[in-house]
Image (cartoon, rainbow, N blue to C red; front, side, top):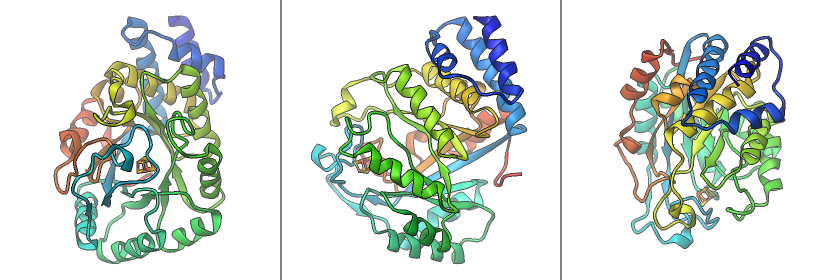
Length: 329
Ligand code: SF4
């Protein structure tokens, strides 16, 4: 296997893509094994070359802590799970204050996240206001519901630079969405000037290697500028909350595989929730989040979710020889 890993690394560094079979073979490695450390080390070498040792921070702010009628089986905001007892919608001033914090603390990508049916026109207005009030080189984007190409162009014109969107693991089974509707939003983004960020998520122990490989390929096919992997965080009271979270090493292994699969096609690979092994095995982007969090039973107006903050992320990247920048090259 070690020989194969070296060959895969050489292939990727030569600009060749790995096959689905090779990706499945990597995902089948025991995450607790020594050979998985070799896989991680190979992915790290690729990460250093592809990223030029540049790491970036992703700052998310959840704008509305409100029940969402889409009731995804992994999300704490699902109306049917009855987890939200006190609703909160953050004011424009509160959103701006949080964006300013990220902009002043070296965050490259700042994203406003909402439940499915939040008004895109209101968000467009909010983005215009943020652009006027918060100076800086940061890039601003949205993680919202579905929209078509005309709306994608309108959002871009109002100052939105990127969209976080994904075909989630178990889409159509663990969610009430028609996967084609999610895909049509992904196409609308691809056909507009908006950039796409798309992680393989939310991955749980219930997902197969085939499902992981297929969504990983989609992140490349839809032209994501950032790919990566996010673990499903089990929230008590949600239907999938009874299944445990992936181990840190398994998430790190998936990061290594996504890094190798994406090669030079997607330069930046994000892990969430971050762990140091995943950063050692190929991730160069980490997420800090505040506000309404679909991975928790409460809302975080100021403090950072999971106690993971900018200082911690920066320290972990610097430990691996990265420098954290607030803009691309
Ligand atoms: S994941 Fe999004 S669409 Fe699904 S319930 Fe949560 S907020 Fe709604």
